[in-house]
Length: 140
Image (spheres, helix red, strand yellow):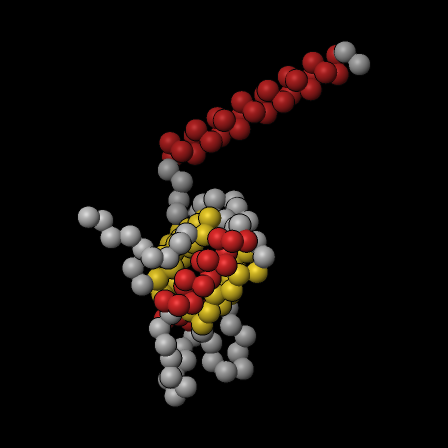
């Protein structure tokens, strides 16, 4: 029986996804993935149609944030509430580390085959637009 995460997934715009991944949040974008350990997160806020992940920072230092937009308001609230409940508790005397130093970024590269397909598709779209534009201008 598969084990599923109790945390919901925040599906944002521009192919961005924020989800739980084994004690961390995984922020997936088309060209990169960020693995944000729960220990690096101060809190998660739902702000309308976006989810903001605020990282830990020393007192007096502006914390780094990661934002995912284009999320439904209900999903943003549910995601923020669930992550905040899952965050480790910190005592006041605990040393606060810079959360951005714990974030692991992985750059995703496009394969040659994917790049060729994308370029070919862009050419076909451009050719179709040019032909339709020429056709429309021929009959004013």
